Length: 419
Image (cartoon, rainbow, N blue to C red; front, top):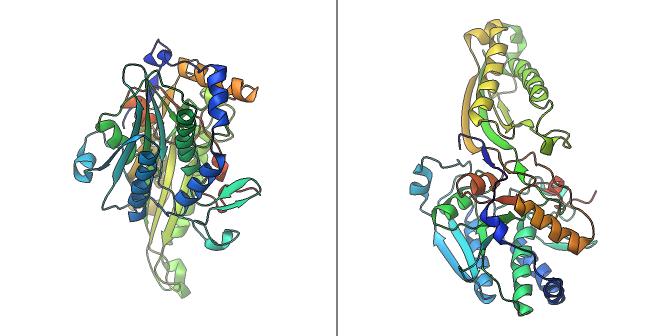
């Protein structure tokens, strides 16, 4: 994705959607199977569907069976990886994989508007197991009114809520005026291959809700995120005469300071939807590898990180700003002038994406929230990349995030973390 993605305010088919009557909502809520929902979430958490793993595919097949049992016509298909990745607008990926499966459950008829409920089934690795209370990240432990486990928050919880919300509507005997597409996608965590392939298969709608964890706030805009790799060279020598060499780690310290300053500059006054966030567009170094022997001056360093992209910003502009920052650092150091930092852009390349805060879909979800919870949801942007930009940009589908859980607990030990 090379351009910022925006769907503005003008009239859109999303206006064809409307809230259900109060009596219909009450009938559906009365049939909601909370016990079954929790049990389903626990079973889904137990499948360690890390991005790119075979378990990711196992989870898709398992969920396809649940779709069929619930009366949703499932379309489960193997994604042609070679063809998909060769597409000119492919959004990028990081995790190696040998297979990927798409899954969409359909219910209703196409005579009326189509609503897409989208969620991803892949999760990130659990990290240090010692930081989990019971060292069981896939246990699905229930405590203090919450289900714990990798993916409980991000975002198997939202995915299962989609399924059981529709099951409740069915159990209440309610009929749809249109159609719902229940989408379970893979590879969201590393670029969006799953949603990209689902769009290419022809699954579109008049509006989409991605049930990412938002604390039931409405998020109609997401910043972008670009993955980068930096390579620095030093000059190795024996540690006893380290001043005869050049440490790549010491040179990286100059780069680190420049990146921190760049992050500050890029987070000045900006878009109104992002003004409530402490750090709308983070710049993070996530991995760092240097040297190969404790008694040698390190002559190589590789750092990988993520650069936030502002709402409405062309990702290429963001790339150029980081590259210019590194060039300035190198110009000021004698060693780096002769051995400049090498920059690579790889993996997930998330553009920003948004719809207007006044869009009819935002207004509809806000009204439904107020009717259910008797309070007004907050409406703001998010500092992370997501499949929203693919729905909006490639599918021309008005899309927002609205779901259970708090993104602060995503990717954390004891997800959802309560301390």
